[in-house]
Image (cartoon, rainbow, N blue to C red):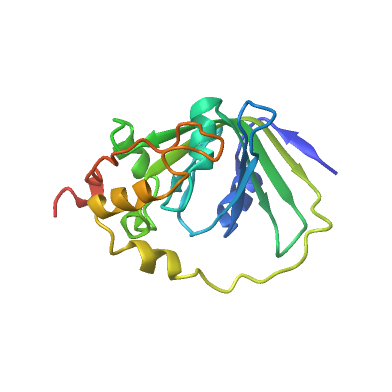
Length: 202
């Protein structure tokens, strides 16, 4: 029914990379804190860096709960489930870290995301996850659902933002700089967007 893996490779990696949506779960250390569960879409925003490391692009939104939880304690779980084909659920339990725009690792990490324009989505961080436990399960109760297309709404909303206007947008939100439980979230002011290596010759 379920199997534990020592690395992300082969069939497991292919399954993860083919899914159009995944979910993230995180929580503060406080037992009275708020558990967060988020769906993540947009093809090309997730990358398997190596057999024990994944990363995904963190885009503009109305809160920053995952960022805040990772800054406090690093715990995160990623989950993928098959809505088509054989029933499968894959979970990666691990340690996560938000890498922000002014981090020297940013340019190299961005080389793993070549099929999406992050600037159109208010790109604010890269979440890097080191897998500590990799496990699948049956997914027999997950329904069949079809994937039609990406929604254009996120890009149409944030593509027009500059670094300055995006920073102003974040400052107006109650739970960007601080989480629902008051933990430090996205550091502001928002650093400028670093140049991407593939644009260096422009």
